[in-house]
Length: 408
Ligand code: ATP
Image 1 (cartoon, rainbow, N blue to C red):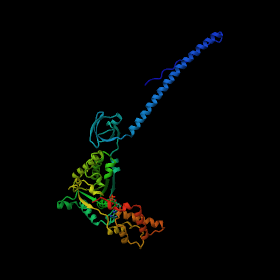
Image 2: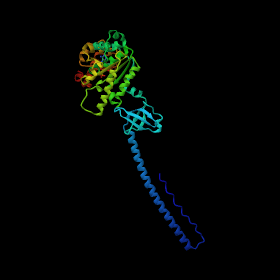
Image 3: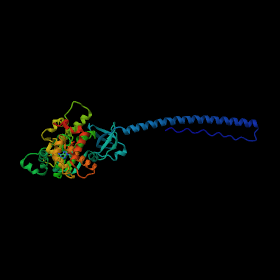
Image 4: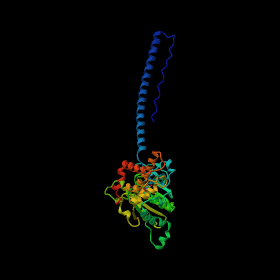
């Protein structure tokens, strides 16, 4: 760093008061000259200092900008594979590239093989990440024996029966399968339009078998944690094994198991890796173990046939929109705890709600309750249901006309 130049000495002059006037004048002139010279030197020094200040300020501004850019730039996720003296081997998630990189002494003391770290473009470790329980917790919904029973599901009795046979029985009576000598279905795929009770079905099985329900959405898997999808799939199965008996429910499986396309973007590669991990987890799966897998999709048409092969999702169950009887049952289920007037005709309501999903029938019931409250009543009458249907048709006719869903 350059040091500031020393200041010139301050000019001093002792003038004898008894000096003759002309000599005193001469001495004062001399002194004035000296003062002027020092003034010039100081002015020059001041200008140099100001110039330097300006250049330092510029440097500071530039560094601030660079710092902000560094802070805001994306970092990649990697895992520490090995620590060798003051260097570590890291493996970047996603492309599995392994690199030997230097680490600052402060970080080195805290690093161990297996740690997750954030690295910059040149693989410099910027941050040690928390244990992945964080990432797991964010992306999975975990419920110990969820509070949904088969009696809460209406209109899809055949599907309930099939799911019980394919998922519940292997968990509840594994010896049956052993005796007969067959493996139960590895994975069950529920497909059909949204809001028809697929998630409810999976939860009800978990409840019935006292299993932990672990839900993960396919879209979250590939969207939220770029480079981490396959790792999260591994975690998902690991977590299920830790909490046996468990039901793994993968919603929107089409997001990770769509048919392969020609495009080769990095996003597609990520989806591919996530799907390969899912397939390899399923292939290495103990068919009679205490972890069962259920997946769901509204886009059956988009699925890659690789996931439908035997030993993978080999039991396909279509969960359709409820028919008239089904809607009637669902109305009864969702009004169980409500004070419903004697004039309410569920059969007529079921007829009026042709094409509604279970979720939409549920919102009619809730909305009818709101109409009763608005009218200062505690009983819900037929007119409230009719108003509710009208309101829902007006609000979201595009939602109701579910004919456009692709689930064939
Ligand atoms: P998505 O494909 O959008 O995930 P889903 O088929 O998994 O939908 P659910 O989440 O199970 O649908 O249903 C949403 C809500 O709709 C449920 O919480 C429930 O209240 C109601 N519902 C849907 N189907 C039924 C049904 N068959 N019986 C009773 N209620 C139902």
